Amino acid sequence: MRSQQLLAFLAVAKTRHFTHAAEELGVTQPSLSKQIRTLETELGAPLLTRSRGRIELTDAGQTLLPHARRITAAHAAARADIDDVLAVRAGHLRLGATPSLCSWLIAPLLTRYLEVHPGVTVTLTEDGSGPLTERLTAGDLDLAFTIGDKADATGLTVRPLLSEALVVASAAHLPPLTRQAYIGLAQLREQAFVLPAHGYDLRDLTITTCEAAGFTPRTGVDGGATDAVASLVEAGLGIALLPAMIAAGHPGLRATPLAPPGASRTIALASRRESPLTKAAGSFAAALEAHLTDLHAWGRLPEGMRSV
Image (spheres, rainbow, N blue to C red):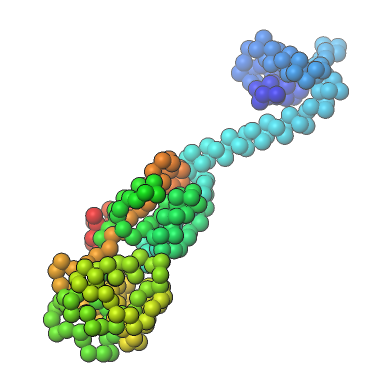
């Protein structure tokens, strides 16, 4: 049973007249009659009969009538839902982001996006770049904000968005690490570091940055999310390399810039290379681009952040 056949049957059942039904559907009467005959042949039973010049439903027609209504209603609902998705009036966006991005970038961005697309539901997953890229590759996420701008063997497209400067964070109540405006990495050789937990991008970046300067960071406290690291440094339990924006958000920290060339991390947007974006994900990527353009134009990028 095709939807056109059921619509033809319902029109005749409603009007009890072939000509009026054809006019209602905007088709010719022969075309309408052919649809009915084909449906009757497929079902193996007559659906309509003429009685005293009026179209009546047979027992088979009466039996089909409620089913035809339900089927055509379901088809119409499916078409409407698909149209909503195509127009981004509906849909589901599965988004991943590292924790440090959720407050300053993700929250206002989603607010802006959902004001335009209120019918889209969003599932947000917070994690480190490694687990996020694994979930993205597995198809569990549509887009993920990651740290690092290199596409790897996982089949992802990684688009760099922002570069974020790292600073040396130390407790504000303790003597400063240097009297100079900047501090060299080599001067941190004897310092105890508070390192983020395994799996956090900032942990790997801290270690590789220090190793590039010729030493392995000495661990004072090992483990914790970025905000926990900042709190432990505030308490005087060690120093840490932190994004300038995070350090600025903790009044108990002293942020000392690194001597040139300094160090930074890249914030990027990752997607699966071989899979087209859903309509919801595509419209979100466009909203992100507009949001970052506005932040740059208005001079509202956080401290230590620049577009790339």
